[in-house]
Length: 57
Image (tube, rainbow, N blue to C red; front, side, top):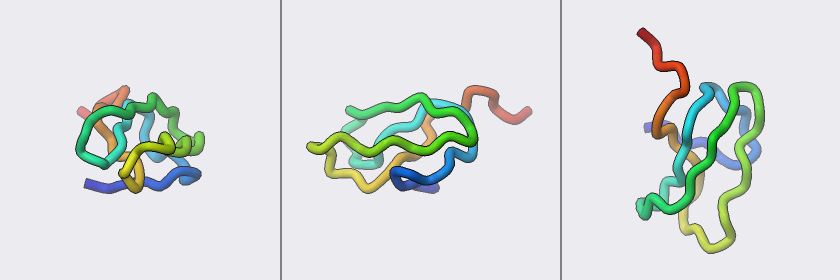
């Protein structure tokens, strides 16, 4: 699974979760916007797509 860093351009609109494995940080992001920073206490290194807003057929 691809992990995106804070500040990178969002490739697909959807719900992203941090990759720390604790499933505690989520972000709804829009294609073309930039990923937000992770919470200070998060041990993850970036965001991974959990659910696309418009899945491909």
